[in-house]
Length: 71
Figure 1 (tube, rainbow, N blue to C red):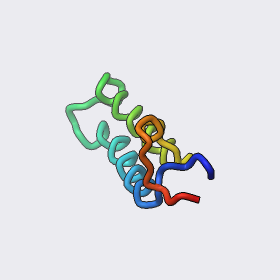
Figure 2 (cartoon, rainbow, N blue to C red):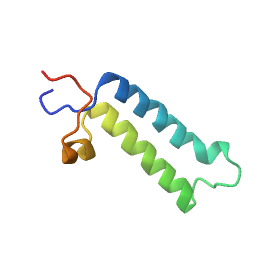
Figure 3 (cartoon, rainbow, N blue to C red):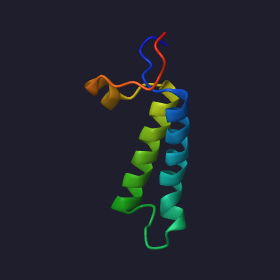
Figure 4 (cartoon, rainbow, N blue to C red):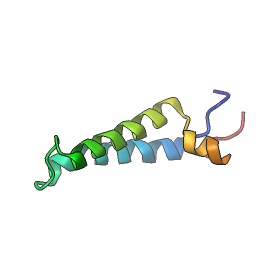
């Protein structure tokens, strides 16, 4: 993709972080999935999954960063 700015290693890290963020409310007994912290965890997981899937991070684009090789 021409606009991709997230490289392979970065994508794998984002997928793992997404899984961790999604699992936190279920693994930590004091955090309910429907609480504000649980919802924030799911939102963070969704952001990680989406940026890994589309290979584009808006924050990287804002600062001109990239971990993907140039095409």
